[in-house]
Picture 1: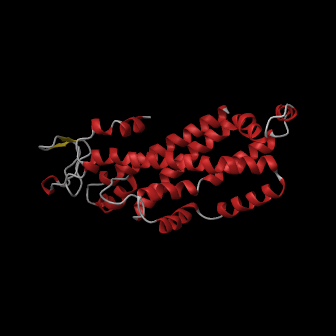
Picture 2: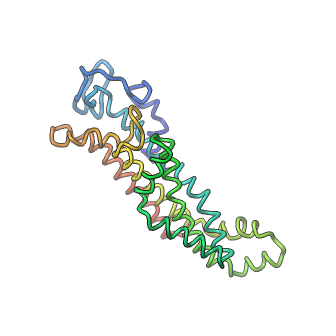
Length: 258
């Protein structure tokens, strides 16, 4: 929640108010955390171009969180209908959709995202779409399993007897009873999307300079790990780890309650 609040309130808390916190001044290059200049107090120091590192880290959180939200949204839009129809109708439709999900499931996610970004092109919008298109399988598998267990229960039979349409039964009767596992898989997918975006930015495929991203900062500054400026890459790396740990902890708690 702290990271989300900081990302939302970024314009109020960042020191560098320029677009993408890209105010360069080599006279401020590689200052340590807590240093002061004419710009103000640099909590996380400055990078090799003299840019305020705290400002870029905060703005970088916006990229990671946005990728997570959009990827989860796309995965829900595709995964819920596919999983619902497969689980409810069964038969050949279920066999075909399950086969398609198994094929996509067998492809490493990062490689599939990289392939999609090569097709769609580099850029943050393409990353949003690519990550979302690779995560619907998990949602569909969870929803399918839930529908297989729910469709034979008495309330579904009662809805059929009362003459409700199939669409009503699927989305109004059965789907609300799957929210528990669905919330858990959404939290897990959010964490996975954050990691994938960071990995793509580290490889140079994700957010392009001068847009700040946590993965891009690690890629740009990991050589400084042995020069006494390790904080340049350790700070965004630590925030990635904390974000993923927080999301996985939430998914575990929600899973136990559901």
